[in-house]
Length: 263
Ligand SMILES: NC(=O)c1ccc[n+]([C@@H]2O[C@H](COP(=O)([O-])OP(=O)(O)OC[C@H]3O[C@@H](n4cnc5c(N)ncnc54)[C@H](O)[C@@H]3O)[C@@H](O)[C@H]2O)c1
Image (cartoon, rainbow, N blue to C red):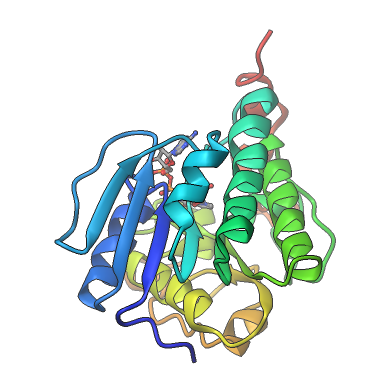
């Protein structure tokens, strides 16, 4: 395991839901932070340098990466949106983060990928990271591209990359789907810490809690030390779900994408 105390990590999307939770957890573990987001955010402590920047600005990303031991790339559009915006922010933005890491000599990038990359598999199917992508929308497509960029930067440029396919990050599961896809805040921190500290050169794994019923194989996460502890069953009895429906649920519907498409 790679030691993270007294190391310095850049966190993109630092003002966001997961970024805020993660930064507090990293601060507790004596990790120095460079927290960046397109909007402002409050430092979590003295060792947290907050810089407002757009992932669209490659020079700004390079400057942020100077002297860092790793980058956790959470910044971007987390939901379905017009493809032009997703391409700009999620795909080109991820390229900028990886390229900035290369130029600044940062050895590891942890990438916030998504379960939406495989959301078209039917609910009854156990999906593992080695199965082909079946995105449930354009957001999922942007994550396929992000993971491909990570793989390229590992294979071609020797940067260690870990793609974390995040489940449904919520305080508690709020639907039958989320009873299967829930990722508790504590398990999210466990998943990201495992991604930061693994000695594997690259990995792709699902970050999902230890829910009694899951659709995603945990082996790739187990291999890098991700051991989830929470279970959606603790919040109520499991409700049935139609196993022939896509895992992405409403996100997989035509309307969900069409309603967000620019004219
Ligand atoms: N929350 C979930 O359940 C979930 C599930 C799967 C994947 N993810 C992924 O995890 C990451 C973080 O998710 P979150 O829930 O914290 O989302 P969030 O929207 O709360 O945080 C994303 C942050 O990115 C910032 N951002 C947007 N555009 C930017 C730009 N051009 N430059 C710099 N920063 C920009 C936003 O200001 C925001 O603070 C996202 O990449 C998302 O796709 C989240």
